[in-house]
Image 1 (spheres, rainbow over the protein chains, first blue to last red):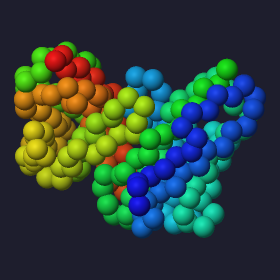
Image 2 (image 1 turned 90 degrees about the vertical axis):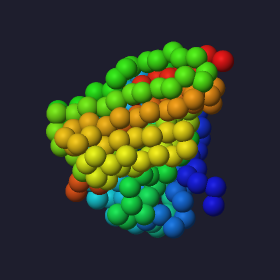
Image 3 (image 1 turned 90 degrees about the horizontal axis):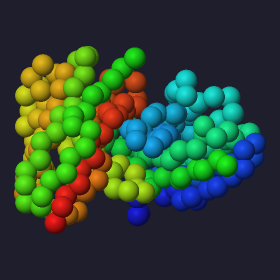
Amino acid sequence: DTGVSQDPRHKITKRGQNVTFRCDPISEHNRLYWYRQTLGQGPEFLTYFQNEAQLEKSRLLSNRFSAERPKGSFSTLEIQRTEQGDSAMYLCASSLEGGHGYTFGSGTRLTVV
Amino acid sequence: GQQLNQSPQSMFIQEGEDVSMNCTSSSIFNTWLWYKQDPGEGPVLLIALYKAGELTSNGRLTAQFGITRKDSFLNISASIPSDVGIYFCAIDQTGANNLFFGTGTRLTVIP
């Protein structure tokens, strides 16, 4: 296992288009998190899954955002009708239940033009 | 809203120097974490602190959980070029199942 994988690493899209990102966590980790990081800021929590259940969503996760983890393994984050303000690094992380210190992936950098 | 204030915002030091940075909050927390982020990568956990007053080392890094539980400190001894990056403190909001990150300290090491 090589850690948390995210795909793609970079995505440039036109405003109004839909985008989808994928995260493959460490295989034995049952928790999966999505964070967003804008330039000069620390990561901000978006949502998390325990196995396939989405247990918490931040108020940052507008109704244009949807995340899934259908089989409790990989997860997808979709942004519909992208806006320029969605430009950011989207980070995925995974952990074991009750464990501190997530393992983060390298992120997907989204640029909306 | 919640805030974790990191100081300084940025540092420029000569290779071999020691570095100190801190993180403060107006609230009490039970877990403090320190992460390092390299350009274009996700954060990597350096040290986790679980007890007020605790002092924990990881190689050249030493972190302390403040006795008031409202702050934490990270020291790097004998800095090397690969220490360059952004250092974030984070707290584990007990029961919230997510991490809240500070604003970061950007470290530049001049060879």
